[in-house]
Amino acid sequence: MSTILLKDVCKSWGRVQALSQINFECEDGKILVLLGPSGCGKSTTLRLIAGLELPTSGKIEIGGMDVSNLPPVKRKISMVFQNYALFPHLSVAENILFGLKARRVPKIDQKKRLKNAADLLGLTDLLERRPAQLSGGQRQRVALGRSIVAQVSVCLMDEPLSNLDAKLRQEMRQEIRTLQQRLKMTMIYVTHDQVEAMTIADKIILMKDGGIEQHGTPEELYNRPATAFTGSFIGNPPMNILTLDTQITERFSALLPSRESLGSLSMGIRPENIEISADSGIEAQIEAIEYLGADTLIVCRSGEQAITLTVKGKATLSPGDPLNLMWKPEHIHLFDTKSGKRIPDFPGEIRP
Amino acid sequence: MKFWESGIEKTIETGGAWLLGAVWLLPVVFAFWSAFHPAEFSTSFDLFAPLTTENFVRAWSYAPFPRYLLNTFVLVTLILAAQFVLCTLAAYGFARFEFFGKNVVFALVLLQLMIMPEVLLVENYRTISNLGLLDTIPAIGLPYMASAFGIFLLRQAFKTIPNELVEAAQVEGVSSIGILWKVYVPLARSTYIAYGLVSVSYHWNNFLWPLVITSSVNSRPLTVGLAIFGAPESGVDWSIITAATVMTMAPLLVAFILFQRQFVQSFMHSGIK
Image 1: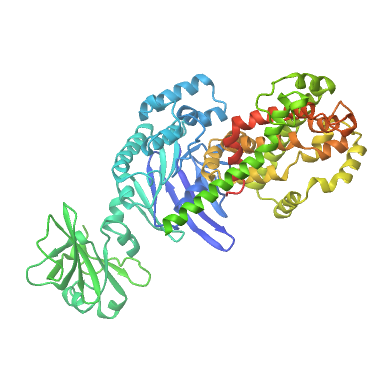
Image 2 (image 1 turned 90 degrees about the vertical axis):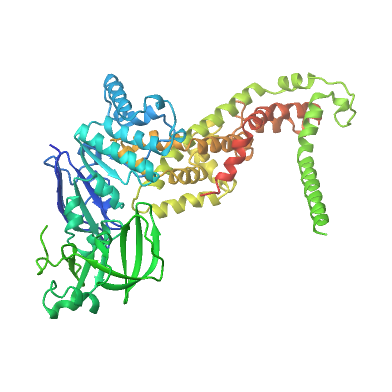
């Protein structure tokens, strides 16, 4: 089995604390996505699992074996890098077989594995080319090929698709997912793109400033974000995090907890859950309209804050028009303004 | 007004370049002229003078040039091989490893760059003498084998290789030496070629140190052999001397013509990055 377990892992360089108290488990045969903004520690975590860095403290286990101090080759992992890390002086076939040659795998095995990988990834006609003669997507496939021939059950990916254009990214995403399920690999995938994370992951770990914000399935992160940060990171366009001004407090007074604590709360509402109401609602004025084809993004201003909403199709409105906004109680998320943590169980919160 | 001015500048520039080129080329042209013409015509530029190869035949027999050629060839190859091995290992250490006192050691290496080897002539002679290696080909090469220039050049080349490639190799289970041999050396190939050309041409033409350290035909390289051959005691016969000179520089000239692009690139690259 190849379950990956991190226990109380910390990493610091001098006085800079890159990771603090990281604890999680990735189940065998599942894709776990490490998601987060730049500098949150997701790549560092991946490199610790790979063995390219050693943890300052804590334990890392792969398949039940303590690998915290082992070099990468002894951990039985394979890795795909952001810039593919293909050797420019070797052909595609030699690139794929690089590791097998280094580990002195018998030639017959090498040939077999190469053929398998090439067939799987559609590289059979490209085996004699050099990386410089390949397109971005083809290079990515070669990097995947190198990872497949290693025939290990753990695959680590560090933002493998961030150098590709949007359409190619979507295709490769599906290919990676199919490949992972076919080969039953345990995969840890690092990305800063929440769309990638939502589509590819079995579970997502959202990280921020060296710590874990939330660990759960994509649905959990989307419907019940544990912090305001999670709420605004997942979902495109991002969730509106609103302060409770007089208008909002008046509208939703029945649903909010008691008066005294109101100053310390923020309300989260997703743009797709906001509706335009004909008469009653939060008064706002349109600042900008962005037409996306299937939806239209409307940015309005209500009092001191900006609210974004989406409507289907094309909106027959223009900047400067007044609007009335309304949303249902079940779509409200309440957060503590200071800590960002979700307020559970407030009156009016309807459990889905 | 502007158009006229730029015309004048361009003319002066081009004219100056041609003039400089001509001045540089003149000694070589004279050498070739004098080598291929009999003695009487060596100092006059009579265009219809008869061509002859007799000078080469005579020069070849007057001094053991075959032996000198062999010595030079062995010397240059020996130095280049030693430099490749030593400088590669040193450059790898400086480029990719952290160790106590690294900066001090590197400063010492750079120090060598600033010292002209001629300054150390006497001291080196003493060392070679103590080693019992006087008048041997290795003795000519020893002071140059751990070349600071080579270490510096290769270190810069190694540093430009992206870390990701090294990490990919590490994940595949390649050892440190394996990474050097399979990743760094192949990717620094153009630097090796450029450095090789510089080293070969420098040591082919090196004169003072070989003159001091060698005293017999057994180890004498071409440069020293030629100088002794052309010494004024035997009279100044320009056609024979230039014939010998042409023989000495011919291999290098051919190599330069074949590799001139890499040659120029090596000087450019040593400054960049």
